Amino acid sequence: MKIDIKNNSKKNLNEDFIKTIKKTVLKTLKFSKKEFDEINVILVTDPEIKKINKKFLNKNKTTDVIAFNYPSAYPLKLADIFISADTAKKNSKYYGLAFETELLILCVHGTLHISGYDDKTKSQRKKMNEITFKIIKNVFDKII
Image (cartoon, rainbow, N blue to C red):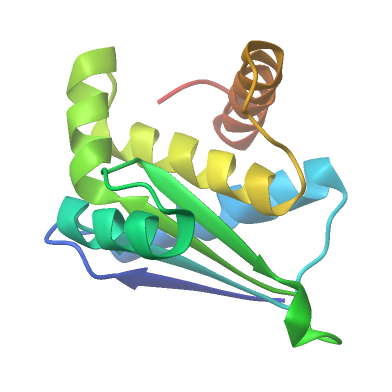
């Protein structure tokens, strides 16, 4: 399986952290028992994610993560996970987390979405949050 990380944001990420993002995606897929041929994790700015949100989801606002599965790519299983690095930075300050931790949380969240999980209801959100915590803890043996 191929996992590409594309950084279209203004945030600098070192190679070790990019490897950690890939490891996090793989652990999340293992948990969800889903397989993909290729996943792109694309870090973008708030204006970019707002454009994506408006164009594809009819929502004229920024968000933290948007994930797309491409079933029409059959027989390949392809997906894109767009993460707003700007919103991740704001969230990290709000929740008192390291920026990198928030990025990984959003990475897990997006990977869960492409794996079939949803968070439209309060109970779905709670379940996704619990799974996210479990995966992050498993990847690092503790929250970083």
